[in-house]
Image 1 (cartoon, helix red, strand yellow):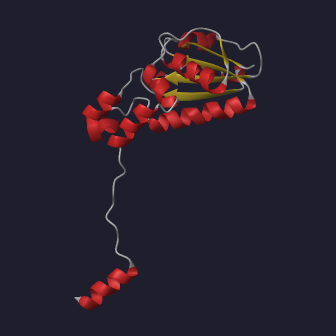
Image 2 (cartoon, one colour; image 1 turned 45 degrees about the horizontal axis):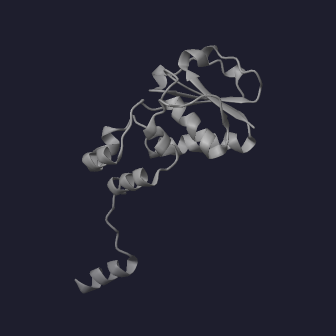
Image 3 (cartoon, rainbow, N blue to C red; image 1 turned 60 degrees about the horizontal axis):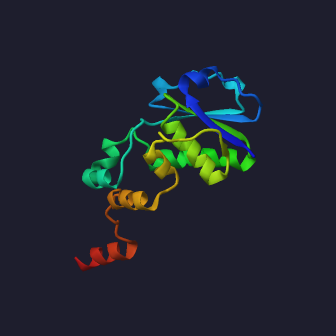
Length: 173
C-alpha cells in the first residue's frame, strides 16, 4: 500500500526519500516563498500556492460576488482542481506522496488527509490541525460547493442576434 506523509518546509528541503518512488507536493503562499527543493531527489515535484487560511458558507454569503477577488490568494476552485488532478495522476500509479507546507501542520495535513481518505493511502500520523477549508475544497464538500456556486455566477454576455433576427430588423425598420 502506498504511503503519504506531510511535514514542514524545512524538513522537505532536507528530506531524502528512502525510495525512488516518491513524489513531493510542495505548498507555499506564493512563488517567492516556495521551498528550495532538490528536485533530483524526487520522482516529481509540484508547487502549489495558496495562503494558510480558509472560508466557509457564511464568509461566501457575506462576500457575495466579490468573493473571488477578495480571496484570490486562498484555496479556490481552480487551485483545488489543479491539485486534485495532480494527486489523481500520482495515485493512479500507486506511488508514494510527501506533502509539505510552511509549518507542516495545516495545509499539508489537509492534503495528506484527503489523499488517505480518497485514495486509500497509508497516513503515518494524525492530522488534528488540518486546514478544514482545504480539505473541504478537495473533497468537494456539498454544502461548501453549493454556497460557492451560489455566489460565483458566470458573466452573462449579451447575445448577438442571429442572422434571421438581423435580416428581420433590417427589412422591418
